[in-house]
Image 1 (spheres, helix red, strand yellow):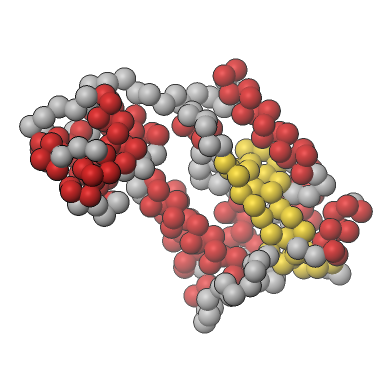
Image 2: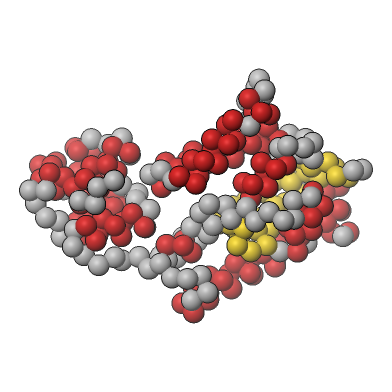
Length: 253
């Protein structure tokens, strides 16, 4: 992977499947100027770097690399999550998870590591026997080796689709690609002769816990104005009951 500015732009233009003309129009510049930037015959201004990284929908980490390669200081911070500046973000995550109780809710990072969870999620993980895992993808892969999730294949296909979209967004990611490969090669998906039933209004996760059958679906939220690299990747996944029996299970617990 080259660290030359022109090579970074060309690489990401190829990833986004844009011609020089298409990217130049999106960034508000001439195709000739873009060609000169990619070949190294011209040097970009800081504003031009940011226009190009925005037009290419680069992740913040990569945009910082492009700025550095052009001789400018990075724009986007990369703070430890316990930094005081991120206290409003931590408070918002906690508020969303706490307010969602008694239903399960988790916060996950770029690689689906669980960074926070409410009591409903902890109780659910313990009930399905995966309380020791700290990664949502590992949880789902582990559940695929048993019969707890009735429609595991449907959910695995949806997760695989999400992973592919995230890999494209990040321009490749070794960890996410490894997870995608593990899902694609899983014996249950290899033996699955159908596709997810997208004709359903909602594709829930259906769990069988001894004599209890739970049906849950999720909403995923992320921060729109957080500029810190790590914090902007955090997603809050809130699970909702898809039927009255599931609602009663959590509200009665």
